Image (cartoon, rainbow, N blue to C red; front, side, top):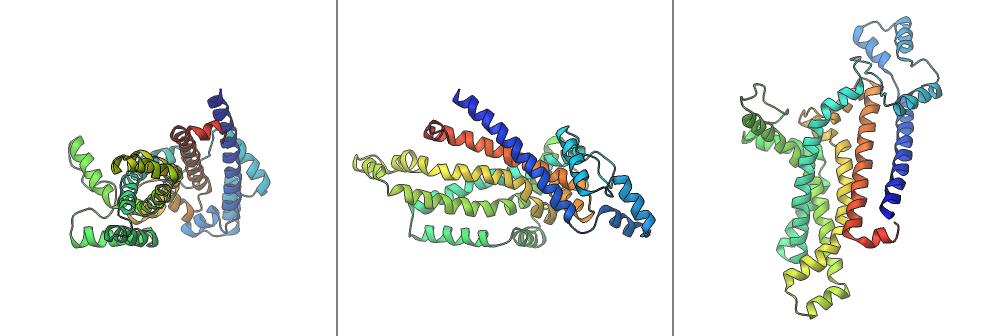
Length: 326
């Protein structure tokens, strides 16, 4: 019964959050200067008032903003996200075509960050105030402070231009190799640099978060009691310290998983990765409002879903959260 109430409450909150995001995104995008009519007029060299008026009337951009908003919200509620102003294709199809590439990139970055970051944090906590701790802490601060695009450019210069080990751009080679395994390996080689670039920022956060949580948990009374009972240190660390220190890590992992989808735009742009981040960047430059709003909505849905998974994992990791009704 408690789980059913949790699911119902989550669905209501998710619907309200998504509706608010749809309205806010629409207002912010439409308040930006310029529109697709001016872009098309500039490209065609026909920037006369009649052309602009006809184009705006064709896309409904000449209507008052509240009327456009009501029409858009009604279409979204009926699962119609509209068509692209540029290609005249349904934007839902365009987003779904690009989504697998983004999920592959963000999934690889997420797994990489989740495996390496907490492991480095545990090592730093065990070796606190020793050279290994200092080295991990400095490396984490460096990768946390460096912009993602700059890390990506450095990787391209070193691993692609200087060493020639990995391809710098794209998802596949210009001439794909024959065979499923060969094509999969070719995609994996193209995936390494963007996944590392996107994941290193979160590795740094995980390492710092895990180290702090473990050092804080290690000073609690029940950990001292476990050591006083003569339990092996490895068991104290894994069963008593790490288990409780995982709660903030699970919370951040849920936030990171959702934000990765929307935040992949920098890595996808630097490495010419054909995902929705690059699609959003192109839509922004071309003032393709419907396509841009569809990408924003897809990112918002991902954030909401991953937050739901995070809540479930937190309840499984600490049943007191569910019992308290939080």
